[in-house]
Length: 189
Image 1 (cartoon, helix red, strand yellow):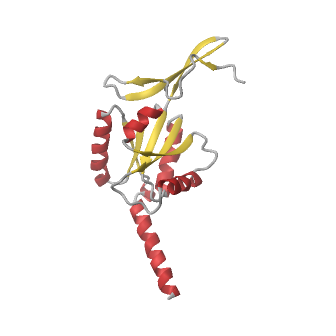
Image 2 (cartoon, one colour):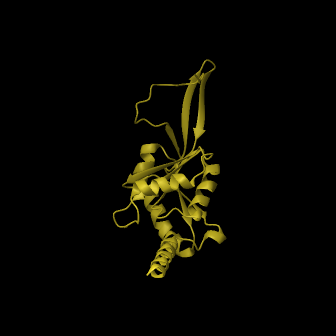
Image 3 (cartoon, one colour):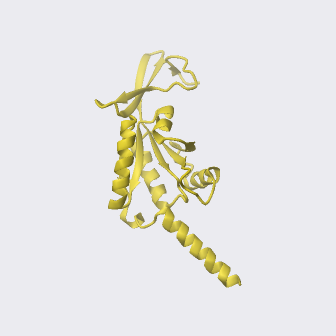
């Protein structure tokens, strides 16, 4: 048993106190605990890295690796988007992502969500959304998303994709797999 106990008995849906900047954008969370020595507040940061992850590429894994050292906790969030037709269901993709993340990365978790990412972030007490940017074309789209999320009270941080991984999009990986599958089917006929 740890000498630390919660300063109150939190309800299952309560979150630690969120720290915001002068515009109301989340920048951190304070968790207050008490011990025999008194009250202690600790700043905790939680980032959410959302995406379809169809499939989860080495570029995605690299972004998680970088984010996990920048933040106390990272949630890789498989977003369920009705406008996209993924090759696998959310549960199968979540298993794929979990399998790609080393067990030693104990500050990373995987979850699924249908709805606005900002709503998920508020529900979980997240402080920031992490997004990867591969190209200048990505930046225009990412800027629109970040502006919308900021209007909803959630900040965004962009991490540039490492140059050797920039050409590897999920779309390119799916196309490559499809071509390989077609070649192997042709070889069998």
